[in-house]
Image (tube, rainbow, N blue to C red; front, top):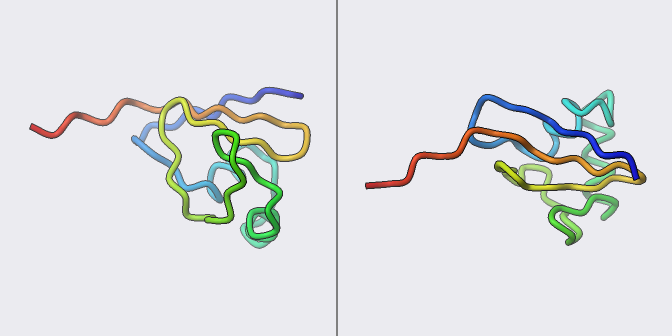
Length: 78
């Protein structure tokens, strides 16, 4: 399985956007089909929500790729 790290500058990224950023899909429509078809796992569990928010350390897998999100930590609420 090939491992890819996606670095972002915001505290989270939506699954569909992360798939495009990792160059796993060319279009949002293809990403949507993969996600809604149950072909994407987030942190080991099938995820069918294309708007799922991924944060630092989250992982998702598609086919033979494992993608790890690298993001700044969110500030704790006071």
